Length: 191
Image (tube, rainbow, N blue to C red):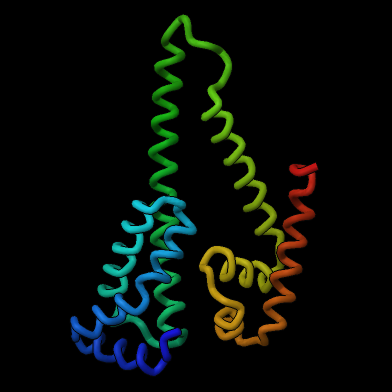
């Protein structure tokens, strides 16, 4: 674990324009940023791209970092949004390719009227994502926020407690209740 005071000092120096300090921040925190990107993208190449883009965004936005949250939380949030952007673009390009294949197959008189396994899998994923999104919107704000910070941003219980200004036990309780509610909402999918 990196002491906060070391990170704080490097952040201050980097905000003052020190490329060396920024490089040290990247060195200290790269593995965690890459790990988060890998968990989200499930691809080593995409994770490398996300980590690189995230650090570029951190450098460009460093002057706007106010220190309201921990630097690592801020970096992880940027990483999360960068990964989500890449996932959306990747899914969009796959959908476009699938639509093109469908049109090509439809033009072919010998094409099978049955959907391909990939098309079925895409539809199942979209349905599941839609159901999860629906379940998330039905959660009370406190539960939804805790779950997003944990599952999407990958924050620890302590980091979530710090951001939400509550006790770690409260975070654990909110996460338990949020997961239980979503599980109930999706129960018919797994029965």
